[in-house]
Structure formats: structure tokens, C-alpha cells
Figure: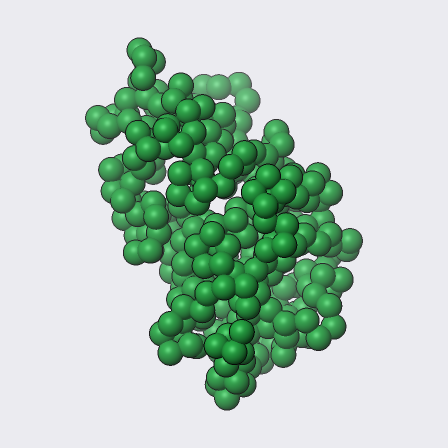
Length: 327
């Protein structure tokens, strides 16, 4: 790989094996950089010798992170020409894939332990983003059909380009959310049904919080002496912050979900902070959710979770899943 100098490596950089990823996660065994570079040669110049002795990349370099994502999606999922506009969120693929696998387990629980596969399973991604990562991975892994919504025209245009490049326009539809204060309203049609909704809500409560978070991350990456922090995973304002942060967004989502209780089997949302859990669970109880689940996830030292809720009783859920076998 040439004579590139060794770069600082963040504490949570990938090691030969990742701890905590879902057993079906294709990245649970770590990164095979030989296969990745073969699938996407553009990754090659970014590969360096890491402190643990094996190959890695400089995770403080946004270009390196994007090149790794492009290679992961090409090698593991057959996604070609993946790219995002400058400044948009570049998601870590292993963690995003984990969400999809845990969602598959959630559906399997309602289906006698068997994961439903194929286009009959419909999933709504709230905030699909320019990267369209959840629909791309979820469709490749399970054959599900997706609707992705977003308020950002440029993000939707980027996602549409990715779908066209991979022939996935029929499997993954995109819808613009015209009201930035709405979640499901204006996107979910009357009588339309989804088996799952998923969301990775903006974490911060203000632009100032987002900038402070970027500075903390920069210090953790060993770059505190740099004049201007650069987010290695990027992210524009609407991707990083909203009024009330992730808990506030989740509360609005819960309130809207209660207005369409019979149209979705399981509503779900990621929560990056465990401190958000009490607020979200309280809102769900107030909304009279029939069942609430919190599913923990982990990637290396990073702990995360998602909350799932349904307004359907067990009998209604049993009737719902029968259509998977009829399709």
C-alpha cells in the first residue's frame, strides 16, 4: 500500500473483530481490506498500518471514511457508484446494517420465528437522507420494499441517483415531506400500510450543540490542535439537529403515530442517548401504545438502542402477518 505514514486511530476504530454486532451482520468479523480494495480500488490509497498492526484507515479523514463506505457497500451488498454530495451525512455502514437485522428479528417474533422476506414487507424510512443507506442494505439483505421520506430536495436527488444507478427505483420509492414539522402526515397515505417504520432522528437540540459535539469528537480523534473541526461522517443542519433534539423528535413521531395506529405494525426509532429513554417511554405510555420494546445494540465501545412500539393487540398482529405468507 506504499509508504504512507501511520495516522492517529480513534479508540473505536475497527479491530480484526467487532464486538456486539448482530450475528447476521456481514461486518461482524471485521474488515477484509484486501476484498474491499478489490471491490473498490479507490479505497487503496487510504489504507494505512494501524496501531494494532493491521490495515485500517484514518477515521479523521472524511474522504477516507467515504471511500470505506463505498467499498463496503460494493463488496458486501453489490451497490455500485455509491456517493453523497459534499457535507451530507456519511453513515457508518456496520451500525446501520445492525438496525436492519434487529428489525428483521422484530418481525420474526411476530411470525413464528421466521424472518419475512420479499417485497410484501413494506418499510418506511423517515429521513432517508442523501445516502439512502437503510433501504439499500435492507432491500439487499431481505428483499423488502421501501419508501424513503425527506424534507431536503438535494438529499432526495442524491438518493434517486443511487437508486437509478443500481436499478432499484421500483423497490425503493422516495417521497418529499413538505412540512418540516411533520413526520408521517403528508407521507403516509390514507389506508396505506407499513410493516415497519424506522428513523435515525437528529441528535442535537440546536446548531450550537451540534458544533460543540463536532469539537468533542475532533478532540477524541486526537485532532484538538486543528483550527477547524471537520466531521468525519459529515452532516448538514437538518441531519444533525432539530428542536428538542432526538427526544423532541421522537415525541412528535409518537404523537403522529397514535393518529395512524392501524396502518403500521411496528413503529421504531433509534435513540443515541440512554437519557432519552425515560422521556420516550413516558410519551408512549401516554399515547396508549399496546407494547413497547427497547432493543440494545453495540458496535465496539459505542452503545446504542432503538425503541419499537405498536398499537395493535396480539390478535390484530397475528392477523396482520398472515398476509406475508399469502403474498
